[in-house]
Image (cartoon, rainbow, N blue to C red):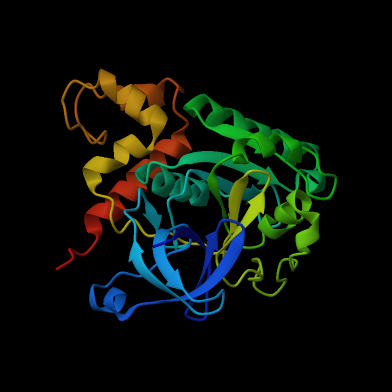
Length: 293
């Protein structure tokens, strides 16, 4: 049986890339019975009489999967956040980073709309960028309007499944339009009434960019730590994980334990206070989560 990759899911159909052909498939009933939902990015076994009447027979084992956006086997997450309009949010960025780290996906932070910033805003964004770079993240500052910084993204996309993710209205579709001008993806400005981006992307689809596949995903503004346990959280903050090697006690949660290396790193300025505060808030959120039965 032939094997391919799902590159789009829409209205109950799965579009499987096989060689250079796109095969429209449905899922067999066995998936519903076993509670398996095929996702964009899945490697699948299928059968098809033609390119309009295929059936997915098997979903291969995934190396990871995201719930929102629904996509599997992601190599790289480009977390797109605007410098302004909407305002740069470290707490939302840190929520994305935790989810990406937990799923063992390589993250890149892409800050858009730098052309709209004044000197004070540029200085503030540069300081944030320096903090995240010190933590170990790559930060790329871009403008879709002037195409500044876009060329820095290309090498990271080669031979990978990458996902653009971030708050709606930050310019994900605009970035894709620069990377692939022939796409002419629909974009909208910020809703002045709601103060947030209008949702312009309605489904997940993998788009060929160079030798890689890139997903433009529906915008969203919140993330739940459904599968993350309290003891997992330290490893989702690289600089906290490094500092935790100096904690006196194993299993330290870095709250009120004595001789905590993380608390010492915060006090010395090695770890930004806002990153530590987000860790504490996320930890409490996870601890307060209702148990699943």
